[in-house]
Amino acid sequence: MIRSKIRCGVAGVGSLGQHHARIYAALPEVEFVGVFDAEPRRAADVASRHGGRVFPDLAALGAACDAVSVVVPTDRHAEVALRLLAGGSHLLIEKPLCASLAEAEQVLAAAREAGRIVQVGHIEHFNPVMAFLEREIHRPRYLTAERLAPYQPRGTEVGVVLDLMIHDIGIVLALIKAPLARIDSVGIRVLSRSEDIANARLQFADGCVANLSASRMSLKKAREIRIFQEDAYLSLDFMNQAGHLVKREDLVAHAVRVRAGDPKGGEAVPVREIPIEKGEPLALELAHFVESVARASQPKVGAALGKSALEIALAITEQIRAAEAAT
Image (tube, rainbow, N blue to C red):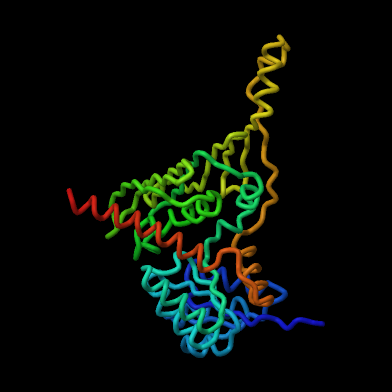
């Protein structure tokens, strides 16, 4: 039986949305239908490059599509998502799910009522680095993540916690299988109305601690994570899709050689380079979304994780704002 292609479109074709259009147009199981954007000239340019139509409004885009990527500013996610769900589209909503929990609950209720899939665009869950972590991490005790980017106006309708740190919040929720017990955070505004630099210490009920740092005032880009568990230390780079680990069994063998007077015992601590098969996370994410729609199955990053990550990100943001108001 030949499966019909999934008709896909994109709402919002700015710096990220244009890549959604590019990838949909290249996926063999997709019929790329077209785009809608508040700037018609931008929409026409992207559509002409990737073979889709320009739609005059969201209703027209939704009526022509089975599935739509929502890649508009965060403060418009709910408005756009609700209109598309009303028209019957499955949605991939870029992270964060919405700007507030009330909006998120409204969107998820509408998706349930319409019987439609909502996948949230936590792209790092489709990075090959994450696939390695999901296989290797079983009971982490301490985790530190750093996410840095140069300043740019795009995304500043929200603070750096909702803009950048939420990626690492989602990663932490997938790796630490325990309830969150405590949040301690700090943030600083530099150029935006909300925090541009933030640090959050998340303590979980099983004793694991995650220390997350995010900045959009950096001179460099970085997306790195380090994890300690009882049998290993891992250091991975999401941006370059590379990393290394030190296994306890290697350290034990090294110590035995040292005690035995083995000349090789004086060598450096054994470090294993991690073989990661590189891939474009956004392409993997969109292919998964399309497959979820085709099979009517729940996506890897569905509503529950998206809402949980948003809830923690908003709690961090509120803690930062409360501290700022108290000074």
